[in-house]
Length: 147
Image (cartoon, rainbow, N blue to C red; front, side, top):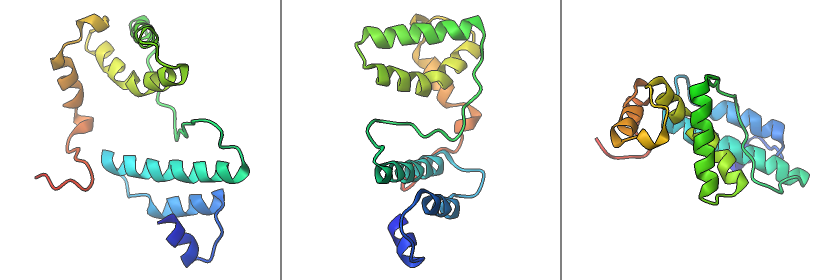
């Protein structure tokens, strides 16, 4: 898609041209979760291509659009600490632990607001409760033929 856009507009790749293309393909608000995932993948590709073009693509990176607000309660901080300790005990690489902490933090927030302060107390119904929140309503993978 990006290549077709560049060829159609007789452009060479640059970060600026990639960002223009991203602006054109961004779905209208509100984005479904699947639309966000697809768009984020394209956005990541543009940033990686730009870094490669500059000769700076030498490690795994996350290109954040925004940083979510996180609670600073002692209960949430304890959940974060315990989760990080568990990941490290599993001998995960430092970068994997860092990435997992970012991805898992929303679930940890859910646990904290649900009054669960110990990871050993998490049961399957907690996971179900997390995924049945309103923010996940109507979530369906793009391209799925399921009814």
